[in-house]
Amino acid sequence: MAPAETIVNTGQRVLRTEAAALATLAEALPADFSAAVEMILGAKGRVVVSGIGKSGHIGNKIAATLASTGTPAQFVHASEASHGDLGMLTTDDVCLLLSNSGETTELGDIIAHTRRFGIPLIGISSRENSTLMRAADLRLTLPAAPEACAIGMAPTTSTTMMLALGDALAVALMEDRGFEASHFHVFHPGGKLGAQMASVADFMHGGVELPLVDADADMSETLLQMTSKGFGIAAVVTDGKLTGVVSDGDLRRNMADLMSRKAGQVATPDPVTIAPDCLAAVALKTLNERKIGALVVVSEDKTPLGILHIHDLLRAGVA
Image (cartoon, rainbow, N blue to C red; front, side, top):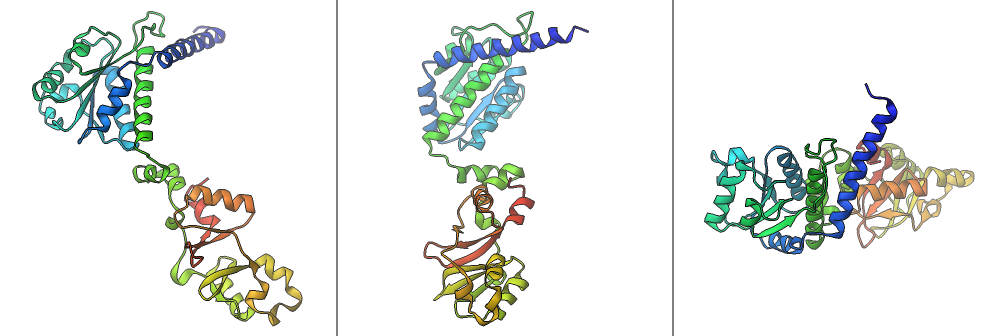
């Protein structure tokens, strides 16, 4: 086994080699890049991505990234395409083919299919004059750069550039489409990311769970609402609009004559509130910054809609 220093040096060399290639790609973005984005934006169907071997793995990831950022996409295995899956590629689609050499035999049937039926074809390859690139309508040619392995043959730098170019396409498309955080949540409903992208409305407690009292309510009624609903606060309203919030802190500050007062007299006026369509992650940030445990969710006209408690956000993984 090689010494640790040698192993570290190898890792650093690989990363520097690939980083240099990405810098070159950034400075010499393929001339057809903008046209490729416009072609995909104009498509009625999907982006059908294909490749074989390591390029296929990268193509699969590119298709997944496109689909999750607002551009309908699907990966079709090049070999399976020759045995029926060409039916997944329609005249409404755009085909994106990846091959470092541009001479991948397995892509032949897909290339022929796109040419026969006039399906727009975008090629990604390191060889401008390869079979793939000569057939393609648009060419995203990768700059000349050495592979990062010692023998210069294992797909390393080339696949890294393909992956990065796919990300560049996806981001350019999502920005042109005006793809926003709320849209992102539609395609990422699960896990921690899904929780962070969820809206306040997904977590708030409304209806009969809402601890609501009129401003002229006795404190006995207010305490009952605070205790029975279990949120530690009561939303105080006047004519149906939120005018204050009674919290544990308000109770302590008014302990001397608490039971002789009305809810509106004890409440903190103009409390911090949040809208139902606000992101859960933003709500958690507000709760932490204000050092409070719950927020009243209100409509634009200050009508209380629900209560958002920090424990619900933390349990869901919004952190």
